[in-house]
Length: 121
Image (cartoon, rainbow, N blue to C red):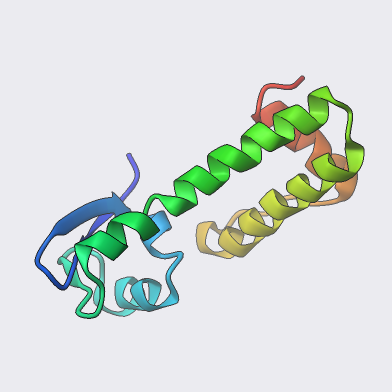
């Protein structure tokens, strides 16, 4: 199960989200790194109305990326498929040091791995 953190908006609303999603914010990532994610993290300058719009953006972006990738593959638009693959590879590359994983991100392996991950092969 993924670790979660609790963010508290300036108007007192609590949001429990995946730590990996929260850490997309440099500020929140620094808090998690230096203080730990066990206690709620107050966001003094962000209201719930704004926070609720910001938090789901990351998960929606991944869903849209995967849908576009499937369409690009189906329509055989190699340039778009490669561009989306690179975006996903860059995101994984940014996270790999945290997870201490080593991957081969050559264009050939990236395309094969991406196709396998989203069920296109």
